Amino acid sequence: MTQRNGNSKNPLHGLWALTNRELKKWYKNPYLLFLSIIQPLIWMGLFGRAMNIGAIFTSTKIPIPTIDPPLTIPQQIQLGQAFSNFSTTIMQETFKTSDYFSYMSVGIVSFVVLFTAMFSGMSIVWDRRLGFLSKALSTPVARGSILMSKVLNSVIRSIIQAAIVLGFAFALGLTVGPDFTVFNLLGVFAAVFLIGVGLSSIFIAIAVRSTRIETQMAVMNLLNLPLLFASNALFPTNLMPDWLQPLTKINPITYVTDANRQLILYAIDMHQLAIDFLFLSAFAVIFSTIGIVLSWRYLSK
Image: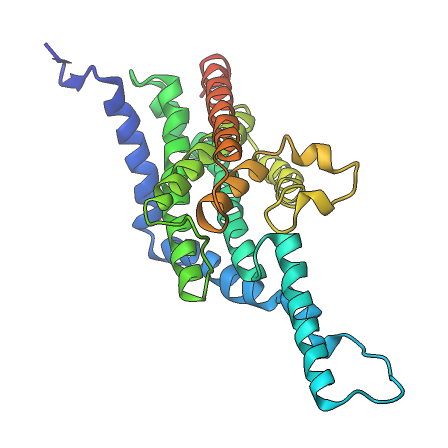
């Protein structure tokens, strides 16, 4: 017998039912769906293309001192070419790519996952205030499944939004690395899955005992920008102040961004890529386990 009183004994049934409920609130709300899709496109189109850092190093921006006697036309052309190569060298040494848009667009994938995970904890607060959490806790569904349904909802949304961001980035001229193939995108989505599980578990675990939306919003505002800016999502960590660099080395955003850049932009360093995925796997396992344990102990009506 696999069923009793018409209810499935499979624990995955309750997990999927709750996950599907969360997803329906997203894709059956046209305004929410539109806003969640258009947000990363706005970041890519405006923020991504507006920060044209490479233009800072063009020859037209570098003052050339007056030389006596004046340079000849061929000498001026050679000097302009030298400055042009100098610009490319600076970009390659700093960002390991000649195009900052490509560097930043991969970081935006991490940004999207972070902000999607942040709002996963809000769902617990709303369910408690609207009474759905009390009903869910009265069913045979495990408390860990209630938490993991929120995590899976966040992860699925993150993967979809990451795919949209990358598609839009390719359309705007994302420059790929020598080792890039379509199959590398599977690795990108695997990294997004792992970081989504870990981050969502953190924010949901924080919300397990929260009864006020303001408390959860305060926690989100406290953590989101430090996690984003103390990482390599927008700027290389080796150029950050010495006191900040140790923090970047324990920031999961740093590892998911590095893994994605390895797979999309750079020549793949298998050793570093393995370190990135080991860290992300440990991060996901540890914090999802902590979240489940906390839900068993503290999740209440």
